[in-house]
Amino acid sequence: MSEPVRAWRSAAAAAFSLTIAMGIGRFAYTPILPAMQQHAGLDAATAGMLASINFTGYLLGALASTALARLPSRLSLYRASLILSIATTAAMGLTGNFFFWSALRFVSGIASAGILIVGFPMTMETLAKVGKSHLLGVVFGGVGCGIAISGLAVSWLDPLVGWRGDWLWLGLIAALLGLPAWAWQKGAAAEESSGAAGPGRLRLSLPVLILLVAYTLEGLGYVVNATFLVIVLKGTPGLGNVGLFAWVVVGLAGIPSTVLWGLATRRIGQAPALILASLLQALGTALPVLVPTPAAALIAAALFGSTFTGIVTLAFGLGREMAPDATGRMIGLLTIFYGIGQILGPFGAGLMIARGSSFAPPLLLAAAAVLLAALLIATVWAARHQTAHSGRRVPGG
Image (cartoon, rainbow, N blue to C red; front, side):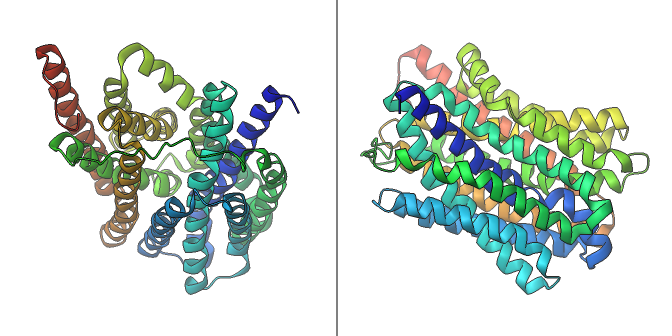
């Protein structure tokens, strides 16, 4: 097999695996949730708790996967994660018991972490070896593709098969996508580690701590929208018919987002691009509350979809700039803090919705959290910019 073909296959495998684990395994819950509320007795507080359980699994899976990612058996871990992600997606349609749902969402979270943290570096190594690292933007487009698939599938299937059938059919779609994700990734398993973890010691300077807090706020803010967007639109007078279509728009906007934010980074810099993306996401989160019209809802969906995966790559890029000798440790910490925000966001928002019967307060607070994250990043960027001009070096920056 030629090197270019090998690179494209590895990139496609990674994209399909993110479609399975993130776009479907994690985010199909959002478009199916209204039907589960209506027909399975799931209230907002319980819905938020299930989402938080999924993100708890992701956080613990990320910690475990980081420790196991360099073992010779990482291809087996990747493939086991694929199987678990597909199986837990389909199995959600086989039960109406909250305990089993919780177990399935928890394991699904672990599996998604395994695919991202174990599988993605294999693709990074393969692409770097053949000089095709630019294909990483294609890889992250898999998340948006999975979101669009889940929205389209639920809009077509739910009237015919109900929420149980939604999960089962999406499990089947994930299984079909899993065939190339399984087969085409095998060439990357034998690669030696690229040393991305970085040998240096990470110094927790003030700029680093500010970035960690900002990224926690981003995780908290984005996940409220990611969990409740369809419910919010369906529960808003005049927007009920927009809900599932808006979710498809989120996915379609997410497909090219990492490529576009990569171009923005080269033009304006890592931190300014991250600030801009956060501001746009905050606007998109608040827009359905401030302007409850179908056009505004679709604009909000496009803003959200075009920023949330881009913010992840931008934050990792800024972390690499701030800790070039300890990149792996920095990314690990960012993942942990982001995970904490993801756990707190849906749980708190679900309780607020259940007690207040209004979507406005949690959405506005989520937008405020992302806005505050942008302001914190701006303080780091301003300090680094000023220090660069004065010729002094900021510790950890």
